[in-house]
Image (cartoon, rainbow, N blue to C red):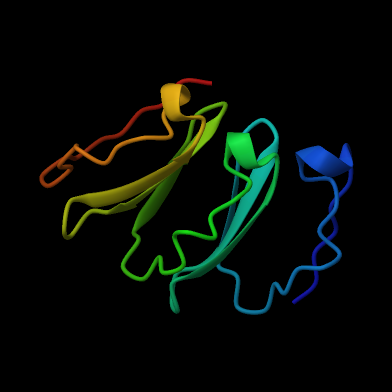
Length: 111
């Protein structure tokens, strides 16, 4: 359950406060990180909030099958339901509220 983070503190270089027990995957944007436990749906995000460092409003990621990122945003996708949660810079991929991903087989992102 321990992680080592380094670099610019505001951009995710500090994670000494985190609880990383049961984390199954870690994802990143240019200045933010997400640590996800796919089994429980719990996640921690840190770094610049505007680049995805805050996922507090999305407290339950249960059912998420894939996570993608652009340079400034994250998308957590449940392929089984076609629902996605996006956060980070609104204009750089941080908004996907009106998109139905049901049946989508491939997702690509820019950096």
